[in-house]
Image (tube, rainbow, N blue to C red; front, side):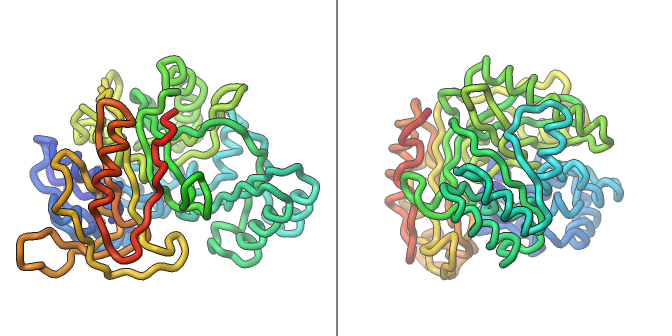
Length: 425
């Protein structure tokens, strides 16, 4: 089969890395890809949101499966366009992707179908949202309704912080139209877990869990980012908890979307918080997470191509997914200044000095000039540059191996958190 992967991040590199192992893949393309995917597949210079050109490429090249990595093209309806043209695609339709595209839609759906989540109010009026915050007890959670690259959620410890977050979203329009509507919800206490399942419109596969780190600095200090690292599996992810999440969250939401004419096919990602009252949903995403994909796919023992085809074709019933029991830890190496302003174009050194069984997934990179001595060369081309990933007999062993290799990589301004998986709960 010919497979096209849409996207250019570490998530897409991880998908390409896993699909390359499938005996059913004969040709692999990534659009637009990065320096890492260039070593596994043919990079195609088409942006992830250029749906017309992507569809034309898929049609002309007789692509058998298109895998959509990021959320933006899904929210824009790429799956609908491909399906209308008779092209097989892995990813939900635009209507189903509202689960991520609109936090107010997701919240309303959960309330109507009894899926456990926190209490919340939705506002399109800046003045009314301000009034609500002034009467609320902190901490206060302020969320941009639309897509904001993982940076549209603020957990404010004071009313003043909440009002400033609201001003940035609704008045200054820091996230553009994503902040036209805001969701203000109660603060829930507990551990956060990311849970993933393949869903074919009706059937929900066995699930896998991971934990990620959103803040830029150690100890969860600094601004929110797209994710600075992750690990899998968390010790709290037991058979009992998986069963509870399946019956209280994943299957009810799958049935709800189907009942409302928006059957969901793709990866369903539930961001959960484990409260004293049980697991509650913080948010849903309509694709594999980043950086969680980088620690989940190395643990998957099944043929990813087969699972994705069965998901897209609605034939997941009875599928068995086996996960490597070893721990997996991924550490993101980022550009200095990220998630704020940063510079790009710096050569990355040390990629040829890593342990053989350590995997480096590229994100913000592009192929650089040939060094002339056989060394692999790439240059920085984004905020999150690399995810260094290692499996280990324990999470601590995986963590030590990952960091030992992170220390061998360098580029101008490189930084990373030093506490990923330091408390492997």
